[in-house]
Image (cartoon, rainbow, N blue to C red; front, side, top):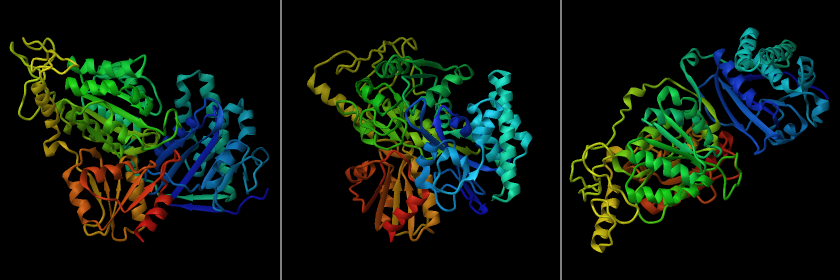
Length: 571
């Protein structure tokens, strides 16, 4: 197979490494970005994988740029397929400008391949399993990373295992580095990227890490969950740091137990988090309704994935907005948030705990698989600005848990903190908390609970507006689409357009209404089939969306796709 001519890549490089589960694709995703960052490059990575332990085709996209970036792109500049199925899996994204590195005979390729003996080199290093370490070394060499930086980091990463395993992986990476260096010397590929000195001061986090940090910073001291992808990373993060921060971590026997444990923890004075996904949340709806009747705070993180039922358990979607908006029988207030960036996740988690505590309601934080499993850089944040205030009172002897307060918020006490009895009940109840079928009182209690919907405006998160002050077209999005929409509009040159990212999707901040009134055309971008945010805007604010850009095949929007589809919508 003839090799392609020399390829020079400037300013922005998209590298995709693909192979079957069990061959170390996740290891590559961990090592390559961190090594490149140590060498001073801006890096972002995201993965897509099948719901199987072995086999299939998984891939990781590592985007390296002269600029600060954190978005998925469709293009592939350098493709490293570790078997023939991986090449077929990525084939639709390959162009004439893609440099494919691999063993042509093993790949059964119909397109030009630069011969790089990954498997043969891995076998020489000790076994096929070391192919991922060979690939790590090869890719890093293309960027001019010092060889010793690569081998030392690989040793460090595998150091927790047996010394011989660490040494063999380091040797495999070194052999791979020689392969990559040979490609550069031959002039097959030239990568020209500016390095960024500020990289060394940044944090490199997954979305699940940011949600966990945000919860800790909001005073979370109890988490209960039943593992379910893609939300399990949040539970794992908090479990790993439980001793440092004094958190109780409980892996419950099921989702029903998890939500009820969290309610019990809040009742006792803790700040509890439940992390789950759509299918698990569906089991929790009776507990959500119990939170509404008990007026016990609750914070639930829902990592969205495609449904119904098991759906695509390892893919991404934004189809659970209506689920959390209407979950639970009866009528009671709630708050719903959806961060778009890592820094936004810190603020959202703090706001969710604050609102849940202050208003004694359930608060939901919606993310998705793409957000949770992608890694991006975040500058260090001053977390001290997020004050933690617990809205608890010391009870008096005649304490009434459900006193008919004018603003609907009864003083919340906890057992043992004061002389009063903290009586709560899932039945309708008196002001003291005892079961009652007084129908007039029932009406007053419903009005009291619903009265909490009238938030203090300062407690509702404003949307993020980006773009020119005078605009004709407004692109509205929520959750993880923020950065992709922004980059697409920058590439389009804005063209009389602006964007609005709605971070609190219920209730809406007053600014949403104000910005919508200025637009002549409203375009909503969502990862679902029915335009759930667009419907909510119509229901709550009366605005009809002119264009809906929807995607629901389990993959996130790419920048190129949004450039094309938004471009058509605003033309």
